Length: 215
Ligand SMILES: O=C(O)c1ccccc1N[C@@H]1O[C@H](COP(=O)(O)O)[C@@H](O)[C@H]1O
Image (cartoon, rainbow, N blue to C red; front, side, top):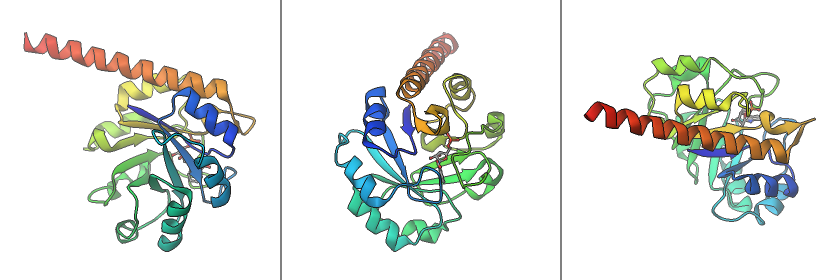
């Protein structure tokens, strides 16, 4: 299981996310209090080890512009967080993360993407609401867990329960690792530590279940 820390706006925040153990970091290029320009993102991205993947978050952006920004910044993934059509996604030059609201997951079927990100319904902006949804709703959805990213209001207190219920391949967090609107190094460390601990515990319990059921 991997952790993405989204809404990175400064080199300090990016380095703290890397030190905390984030596997991916996200830059928001959409209407948001976390919006960053492509040139600011490039200055940060140039200092990030290549093992940490860089994700650009877009909302209903022109496909040609997304491709240009991805090339310029050196993005590893494009995250589509709006109403982008499958045709839009197919023209892009990077692996795709497609965000769906928990209220719109019926649209997931056959969308051409590498990961499905399930988020809470939009608030003022299309994402980054800091609000969790009822994770049990995902139990009734036949999704490939290897492609599933869970987002929406995750934090150090609720992440273990979220992992136990949803068992996603990847977690995405933004608001839950901030204090007064800025990324908080201590919260990022605690979040990643707790997420990895909970995942390890889940793996061990599933391993034990397997041993038990094969006896
Ligand atoms: O973070 C934002 O401001 C944002 C704005 C527009 C689209 C997506 C955005 N972020 C994504 O929102 C979710 C959940 O964030 P949170 O943990 O609830 O704050 C996550 O996928 C971010 O990538």
